[in-house]
Length: 125
Image (cartoon, rainbow, N blue to C red; front, side):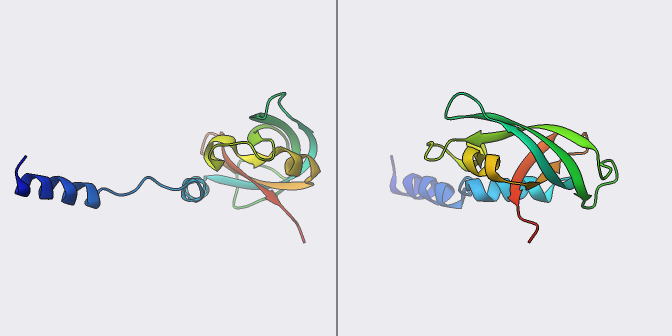
């Protein structure tokens, strides 16, 4: 391979953007949410393994800006979750199972079809 060709390849690699970090991907999901709701958690069921989807039953406490989600509506959500110390990215494994079980409130981010795209623990105080 010639020197100019190697230089061109290296320059192209340097110009390629790095893959987004897990936190950036989660923020991107939040930014594109069509509906956002603060929910009051009523029940959390955790998967048998160290990671999976936690089953969350919650009532809409506040809709932000939400026009489809009425206050008081009961939601059944499958929130990506993982046991403390589970390996992998936050995007893949989501919320800490133990923290989710202890939480009283959460903030759910939905697309226009009300599909959950992100979930954060939330403290009203």
